[in-house]
Amino acid sequence: MTIKHLGLFLAAMTTTTPLFAQTPPPPPPAEAKTSAMPYVMAAGMSDLYEINSSEIALQKSQTTAIRSFATMLIKHHKMTTIATMKAAKKAGLTPTPPILDAGATASIAELQAAAPGDFDRIYVGQQIPAHQAALDLHQSYAASGGKAPLRMSARAAVPIVKKHIAAAMKLQAGKGMGGV
Image (tube, rainbow, N blue to C red; front, side, top):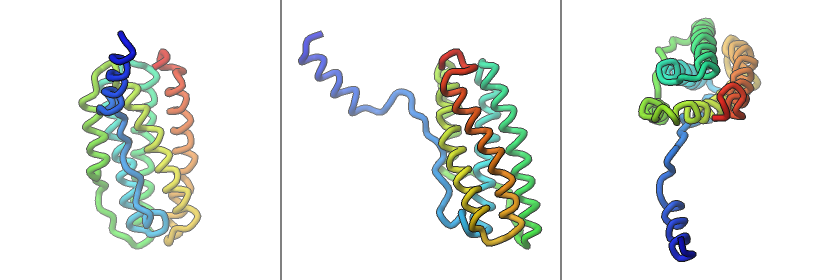
């Protein structure tokens, strides 16, 4: 390949869409860090994304470590959803069941469309920023949230989310994923 052709090739590669996108759900709105109902909705959406994405992982991943991680996420995020809903009711709120926004729905669609050889990397690539956003949400609400029962629930979620981040980082580093 000549220098001219190499230059054209590199230019084409940098102007096209990446072949292996990893689209995490968008972070929660700023008001969710201090206001009760936005916090409940954002925490519920985060949990629902984690549950749905992990159910897809159980269907699509052939990697034992990924499947174990997904199973853990489903179990823990179902528990945190229940805890958040109970705390919301204790705080005098009437929470609705969580729903995914357009960004989280797009992330789920990306996982569903992922080729088998790309799935694990895309899944873990979504999990890390999604959990970092969830950690920020729970830590912020625990420190500054407007309703005491929800602050307690947020505080209880923090170590769970930290555990998930550590596990996802380990998977991304290739430990338990065969270097993927």
